[in-house]
Image 1 (tube, rainbow, N blue to C red):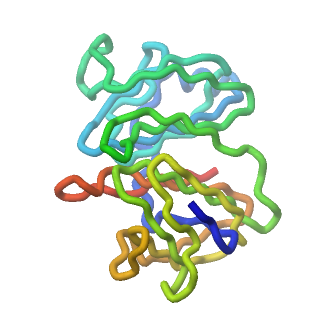
Image 2 (image 1 turned 180 degrees about the horizontal axis):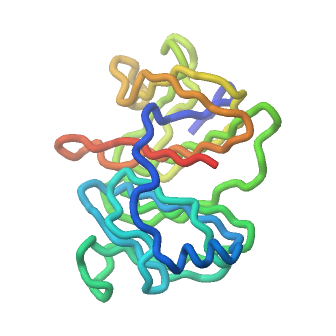
Image 3 (image 1 turned 90 degrees about the vertical axis):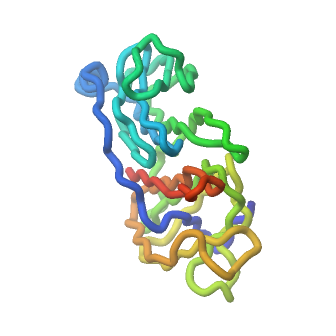
Length: 230
C-alpha cells in the first residue's frame, strides 16, 4: 500500500450511523465518567445481530452498515459476543472475542469479512491526539470481501492518492481542511469507479474513520462504506 500527497480517502457516501439500542449498563458507565471510548461497526451483509458485552446486551437489532458509538466503557476486560438477532442470550455466538480497554483509549470493534469472505471481529485502535492545526485526520480501513483499490482525488490522469489498499489494511493521513472530489477504482483500473465520484468535506481538528465493508463477490454486490468521526 502506498499513500501519496498526504491525503487518504475512501468513502463517497456514508452509511447510516447511530442505529441500535445501547444497554442501560453502558449508559450507566458513561454517566460515571468512564474513560474508554468504543465504536462498534457492523460489516457483515444480511446478518442482523445482537452484540453482548460480558453477557449483557450492548446493541440489539444491529444491521449491516450501521455504526454505534463511541460509547463510554469503564477500563477493563470485556467478553464480546455477537449472536443472530432474535436468538437467545445463551445461543452459540457467531463471533466472540475478549477486548481489553484502558483509560483514555479510543477503539473500534468491527464485525467484518476477510478477503475470502470469512466473518471475523477486528479490534482497532483509534488515535486520540488531535491532528495538526488546520488539518483533519482521515483513516481508511479495508474490511470488505473485495479486491484492492486505488483512490483518486480528481482526474485519473493525476497520480493515485492510494494504491492497492487491500483487505485488513489501513492508511492514515492528515489532510488540509477542505472539500475533495474522490473516486475509488479496483487496483490497476481506471475505466469505471466502484465508488463515486463524489465530493467529501473534511473539517479541521476532526478525525474521520472510513470502513469499506461488505462483499463485492455477492450477487448482488453489497460493498459499501460506513463512517465515524470524532
